View 1 (tube, rainbow, N blue to C red):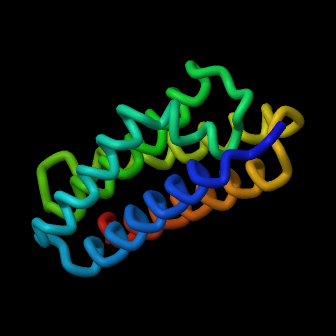
View 2: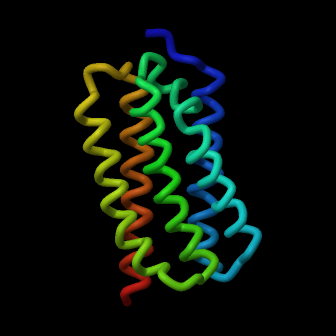
Length: 142
């Protein structure tokens, strides 16, 4: 199981861009450039998550990797709604907790098929998304 380093770096950079934009977007709600960055990250994960995640799990079935991309896209879309201040942001951020938990459970289930680095990367990203989602939800419901 040889890890594709370039795809792994692309995926990590994409995730970092998304999580940083979500953090600053949460701090500066209504910021349209950050909303568009988050929307772009969501679209990239949705359309090419099946390919990008081959950097973490080279032998992964495309349907599984597409599902992971869908879950990432969904969480980042929830961040987009909160950052932009669009209606239904509260609903999307509440459901994003379930998406992040599902992603963490899926990674735990396929742990034996993942390389150690891929498992840790998926797990850390899932926990970061879950923590960010919970923090935003707590602030929104306050």
